[in-house]
Amino acid sequence: MKVLVTGGAGYIGSVVTSQLVKAGDSVVVLDNLYQGHRAAVHPEAHFIEGDLADKGLLDRLMAQHQPEAIMHFASHTLVGESVEKPFLYLGDNVQNGLNLLQAAVDHGVQRFILSSTANLFDDPESMPISEKERIVPGSPYGESKFILERLLYWMDRIYGLRYAALRYFNACGAASPDLGEDHDPETHLIPLVLQVALGQREKIVIFGDDYGTSDGTCIRDYIHVLDLAQAHILALRALAQGSRTYNLGNGRGFSVKEVVETARQVTGHPIPAEIGPRRPGDPDILIAGSESIKRDLGWRPQYPDLVEIIDSAWQWHQKHPLGYSDK
Ligand SMILES: NC(=O)c1ccc[n+]([C@@H]2O[C@H](COP(=O)([O-])OP(=O)(O)OC[C@H]3O[C@@H](n4cnc5c(N)ncnc54)[C@H](O)[C@@H]3O)[C@@H](O)[C@H]2O)c1
Image 1 (cartoon, helix red, strand yellow):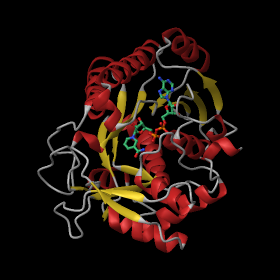
Image 2 (image 1 turned 90 degrees about the vertical axis):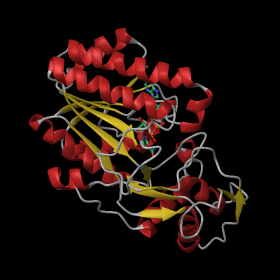
Image 3 (image 1 turned 30 degrees about the vertical axis):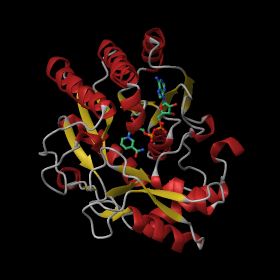
């Protein structure tokens, strides 16, 4: 299949691109390199540097490449930043999604996969969190993803655009020692902890140890990026049978202290940690209920083990201590 991947130079998009290429699909990547890295894009993918705000570019791209499917990763992605700059998220994220949907509909694209988020569930009533859970976006970022989910619902009803909204919990790990996570600024726990092991940070600050969990630190669901990629490929093949929305996680929770301790074991580094104040709005526990995608598509996480997850990330960070910029 010919697939347009927006944000395919970013962390998750670059891994999904490489897995699509391996599966024999033909990939066009659109990325403005605002966060992404040209070196992360698989050499067999066709790369276009450009912005989703550029409607003319989207129109030309669709006419020239005629993708059969779109995977939409490109986004502003930071929960905290979205509270400080709500217009960037409720503006750009939504408008860029609309531009892409307009181009998709104009050019008859019939399959669409959206990177959605666990930030739709700020106040869950049950754990693990299934797709039946009520939606309470935790930030303008989460709200922007929910608006995109709703836009897709209408595009399906009106134009028959089949979509999958995949709500990732915490993406982590590296696809290989040469394909991993490189954000600037980095806000995700595992790369931050590994930066301490590399000597790039003095210590890790744990945001609060008085949560309602066994060791007092927040529990989160970490899903290996290769498992996410597999879910995208299965969802893409299944879209002919109809649109769908899935929560995607490992199904197991690990506390912040467990992550730090496991990173100490994997790296052999003491990784000094300090307890800091809570961050506003952090729920105690977030664990995905991924039974629907398991039942419908036979998806199973292949890398659910925290040691394996951190080890894959560690191999990438050791080989590329400066990320892609050291190429
Ligand atoms: N990383 C996670 O744990 C996580 C969890 C839930 C959801 N998500 C979602 O998954 C997607 C990918 O996340 P990621 O961690 O790979 O992010 P990322 O920042 O590494 O990748 C996003 C890519 O999109 C590009 N981009 C941003 N705005 C663009 C625009 N206007 N036009 C063209 N390109 C643009 C960036 O340059 C970057 O390469 C995002 O939509 C994010 O919201 C990520």
